[in-house]
Amino acid sequence: MIINDYGWNEELEQSFTTYYSKGLIPARILVEHRGIYRVVTQYGELEGFNSGKLYYEASKDLLPTVGDWVAVTPVNGEEKAIIKKVLPRKSKFIRKIAGNTTEGQVVATNFDYVFIVTSLNNNFNVKRLERYLTVAWDSGAEPVIILSKADLCDNVNDRLAEVQNISFGVNVHVISSISGTGIHEIKKYFSEGKTSVVLGSSGVGKSTLINTLLGEEVMMVNEAREDDDRGRHTTTHRELIILKDGGMIIDTPGMREIGLWSEGEDENVLTDTFSEINALSENCRFRDCTHTNEPGCAVLNAIKSGELDEERLKSYKKLKRELIFIESKKNAKLKLEEKRKMKAKFKQYRNR
Image (cartoon, rainbow, N blue to C red; front, side, top):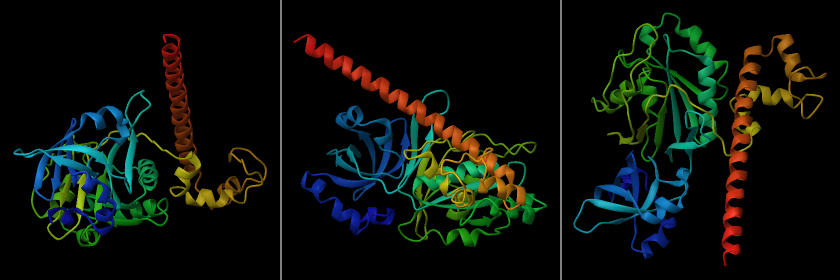
């Protein structure tokens, strides 16, 4: 069965019983581009389209995206399928849509690892890594940091130490796709049925890494500018690719900005990324301590003693403010939508 190669397993098979009885078959989304999909089924790859019911009734974050398992109806005599239902997701990467809108975009789903790729030359930025780690932990999968372009860096050990200081419990790998350094360690994550998603800014070497893992040039690569290490957006769409030796990888377009988005409490979202601050705050005198100027603040005391870097607290507060702001805008939007619904109901009742 072809879809077994893409991660279909006994647990998913058992959960699909109801859909089989309705004449539907399972499929996985490989590519999504402006509402048109490429899906893999037991019959091979088909072109997928959302059913009218799914498109109009599902919110944007519940529409299919790359990595999703879906229930489809094949179109007789055509290499097409109608997507009727999105199956529950075990993990998902959501980012805030760029700009002033208050909407989250589901970029990829159903992955086991999040590869956060950043290059060791001019693109290197610890604060950006903290942001990516926050998104990765919130996805429900395991983050893995990949420091690329080691062949272009003269102080690899110093930069590795910087990353290890902010990535508690996260595996960090130094690689060079040119020399092959570290690639063998990355391949260990790609066992049969496991899916990884690759995140990172433009020009950090995501596409080059994928080509190296595949052993052939599948993803087009553009050279990054030497002055700032920024590349053009080589990858313009998201795609799930199966590796010859087992496992799958989801490539994503490079992101100039990655806005935080969470469906949980802001405190919980930051717990894993800033685990040392979370641990210290347990010893603060006040439970609602903001770590600003309160007496008995264990976090501030740790900064004074040199146990905690002040920059870590600044990053924590910045991301927390961003999450609180997004949450307030989401709540305001929900209230406005509820008000519109009530007005519509009242108008309908009045016109009876």
